[in-house]
Image 1 (spheres, rainbow, N blue to C red):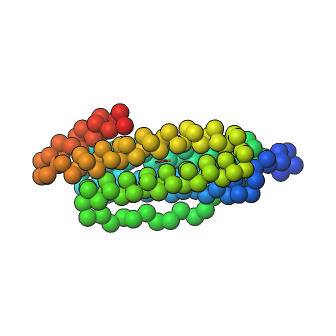
Image 2: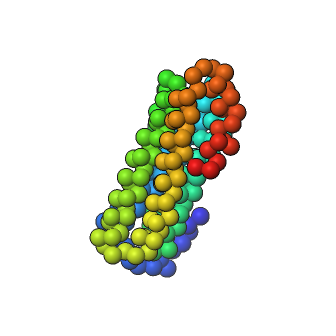
Image 3: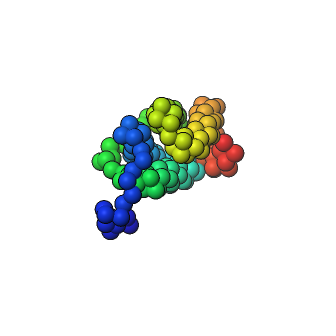
Length: 177
Ligand code: FEO
């Protein structure tokens, strides 16, 4: 949608190379998280965990929205984001607990990435990106909270029946996190 803009009307970017590199890395990370959540959704759907499948499909959409916020910011600042090839997500998982732990590990890593962008913006005194990152820093608190709640709930579901029950209610149970 932006590829038709002639380079002559692009603004000169006000980002430092380091801040650009960090935000561009992070937006690619958000896209790869979307891809990974889609894979978790597929794993769950294939085993009739339709509640978890729906939850992870929604997460995939949210990650794409996160990347879009970063892309829009870069474009607004006169920089052109560069997309990387997406790594293939892990497709094999032993259990629903593995799935929940995988999601949690992804979000912990994502928090580190967001903080790295923020630290670069602090060092460069890039105030607009600092403000942009405030939203993401808060978002990561929520994301890590639902991951922790999901891991706890899956750990407490000790039999197939309780896992099936959890699956029916997981979207509602995690809605507040
Ligand atoms: Fe874009 Fe799951 O954080």
